[in-house]
Image (cartoon, rainbow, N blue to C red; front, side, top):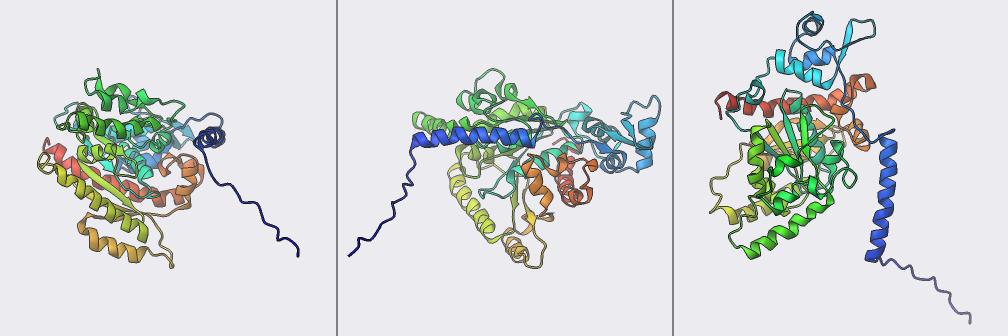
Length: 403
């Protein structure tokens, strides 16, 4: 009787040392991919704007912008003539100058030189991966800057995806001392958070980047609580943001997709909250879990932070599939029942451009009209700009009243 042959067992165990080696290997691969995506150097460039696009941003007709740009001694950017010479291209900084000087958009106290009202802190939050949270954070920052606002983005996610979208690469151009972490460790540090603010490729947008070392906050804050039972571990970030409110119209916080100590700090520091939500069943259920967790923890702060209020909470449906087989209509009805007036009437459609842009570490705002995908880009960019306008108008009324 022949002996039955047996296949050797596959060893699937993974040691910590192997993970370290694997991390180094994929890190090299990532660097190679970055160089391919952003060749010849890993640097991002802001888009250019046509006369028509500047006119749209300003709410004026194209002829008016052309006249102001070419008028001798007018003091406005002239741009660069292209094609037959009847059209002009403007840099991002030049486009923002037009918005600030000639548009009908109410300019904030920061631009006018009278900072009576503080800038607002906006938190973009969601515990579900793939919710477009980070992309939405970046698009809000870009969209608000195109209304003439000065924006600070703060990356609180150790994965540092927002930092990458801003052109700052964790572990290559960012270290632990470039993040919020030094302030988390020592609130008396000279200069506070202002010392780690960096400029970006996008005019009007500064940022405080992230780094994997941000995980250190998740050990430090609970350790401090054990030493000092009255330690307000949830209020550290808010304390650090106070001086920056005088320098920016908006401070946008992007957090990790979990209820970490840094996320909790962001929740307590924010004036308003935006939750991007993909209209799919698992995403909806995850959003409900977010509020359950947050309410459980917030209950512990009611006595000390009872006056805490958000200016608004907004649910923004994102990556909405309008195809006939999409589950979006059903899930949208669930979201409407659950969130009521929190649900924005503006929706961001699903688009292959968004997916392709993500591969290039870009958003729809990074793409110039000359890139040849104007209609597809506009389909996503327009509702994002409408949402930024809606959000901005809420605070314009407060600025007018000096609040």
